[in-house]
Length: 549
Image (cartoon, rainbow, N blue to C red):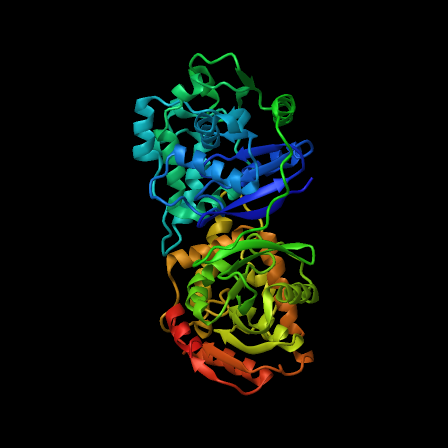
């Protein structure tokens, strides 16, 4: 059974979650610093019998952080209760792994009538000395660096944690783990989860090291099980557990994943109670800030960021690589001029990839327009998305104007799509992330980035902010194959341009003030006809000064 993804509005924040199944409710809470992706296989298995929700806890995955700077386990537990209120769930059962188990435990202490049963998987019991060591050395900062060195450093620390625990205290023989190294795609998933949130990765983790669970454990009065598989770093902590109430059982499991999952399923079949959960509610808007929803477009999920409750007046198509998140400043700056809609293009982030077919991509975007835009609206398209904006303007009615920001033209670049896509498959050493970094960084310094010749240099001030470049890497790395398919579809679209008549809407081109920028603007102007052709500097403020006219 496959799952769906949703955004839940909780006050002025949004919580991202995965859902599958029908029946009585079961909530899954992941370990830090991961996301609900960790729980996806278990969610789909348990959904055969229950209505299962897997949350990104606040500040992780695609969920907004809590409202204060130093969250505690108690805050996450109360947030889970607020989320249940919005979902229409009075009481449920919970599965929590590591930090997620602590949240489930504290939820039961603070909201006792709302927790019917629970599994705490890989339960941490730290000494005071261990807490001090972990809080002072284990949770090291993660910030993007201009040279990309944060990427191999992150990969090394993730990998090292499977070799020696804790990773930061060096390769001491006493710290050697009896574990297999996970497959490259699993290491990659953890790396992407951390790159999405960067230094925020430490907040929830730190709350777990500060939390003292013993008192809450000894007061449990609902059916509960503490378990761990042999390949869990916290497996030795089973021996540290205090005396427990009769309603709490303890089980040590082997490396067998199927036996472990069977036991989780059988426990919940015996203990889940209450009434059936309602269907996931529609995402509620948030006044005064951008908010996200996932909508079905031609049976494909598409993430859309928007700043109003009504249909959109301005559609922004982000660059490739890029995402809707990178257009936040532009979208916020245009909010007074109308409702702004910014989708993640198919294959990016939470938006499903429709394959490499250009016509299918255009059909999906045209249907997205029908669902989200007013009868008269403006399109703003950036970089490689310029071709998408042009084609939509040529095919659809109701478009008032088209603005192309720093458009890029593939032209006669041989094998562009294959050469442009830096890496699709994760490798065991993490070099694919470094290749992605240099592709997006060199994309600001050369066109095309993979030529790197004197003739392809982009001169002048370039957009080399490390956080922006890191966000582009995340957009590529979150779904490498989806990103590659999107590039291939756009490349095919460009090759079809000579068969398309001039657009029926006025086109404005904002371009860089260098030889390549002028050349790109001239090539597009020759195809779409005369219109304003303006030089724009780097950054959204310079763009806004033109777009607000």
